Length: 468
View 1 (cartoon, rainbow, N blue to C red):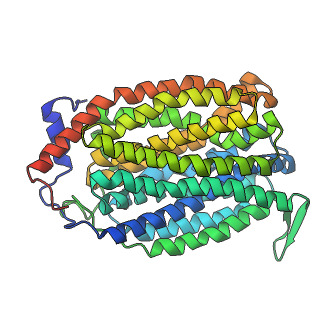
View 2 (cartoon, rainbow, N blue to C red):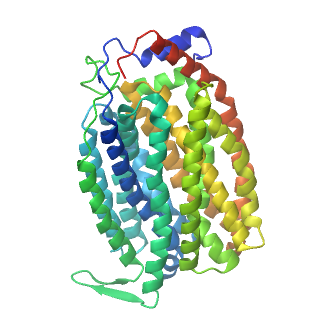
View 3 (tube, rainbow, N blue to C red):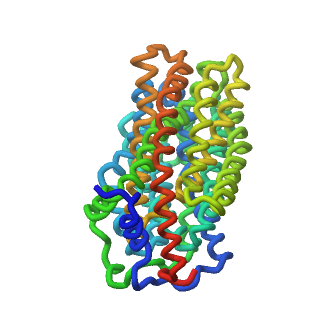
């Protein structure tokens, strides 16, 4: 395995970004590019609505289907990512050659329909397979969106674009907690609801049906986004996707560059996403809040703190980027260094308001790091394999973070702490181990990342890329 620390390897990596026959011409008009970002944000918001709502419905689902924490964890995580683990990355090959707008439109429509089907489930297994359907719909969303973003914006403006898109992530998560809590409160006095054709369902299932129907709007909006010209793609190779094995060989060849980004995401995702889905339950079990209260307070806290984190992340990445080649990953390292303090202290606070404040600051730091973290990967990935590399990256985030994270936390509570009411110690203990480890990994990756960006800039200075 070669290291990009040598001039030869750095030159080879940079050359991969600048094929002799590049296409794309001038960058798309800013208005068009920002319109696309707005639509990406809206669809991401709809996706987060689904994730946030189910985290609020843990108690009634457990009650009506007689489930344990571990069984609930399977619905929160593995059910959604199971299909991704099997075919997500292979399917992403076609993102690099087919029309990405059409792929995204179909994916959004499919997950919207499957979200509504969650509201029709009559038992654990039917709900599990409905959740799996949601996961199938989201397989290509991330890779396709990031691939298009990198063709809409030049490298120096990509962090800002990613930051604006992340607002959809923030808004969706926050609105799902607020609106979901309101809907739950509104139907909490009703044991069941009778729908035409469908018949009687539990009141909480109506929430899934509503979210799914509303999310169909996202599919219509996605179809209105123009497909940008692919930049830096050789016409000779643009007709067919690069074999996955070749992509994996490339990543292994440049492992000092890519391994820290992938490993840090895996470790931090396992901890942070595991905690995120259990946080409403934590406030209910530890401080006696109701589901509507947890949704309302967590939702408004995220709605305030997360946009601040996004702005800080893109501002700091752009500011450091004027003087440092490793700016994007350095911002991630800063956030990973400070974050563990609040992640460990928050669950142990004597007051729910102090715990909520720590959760808010932790979320702020997480979003501040997420913006440059995504931009960092796009900035050093060759254009003709960007879809597949992004899919592999999001595979780590999805399968390990969203898939295993909830089970990781549920297992700690069930088998180590052995008391559901003491979930605070599961959360604090997980953060105390996993977050410092992720921090060390990110700092390890700064040098090779900076060397890669420096080499790419040197190529651009020689006029070896097309016009921007």
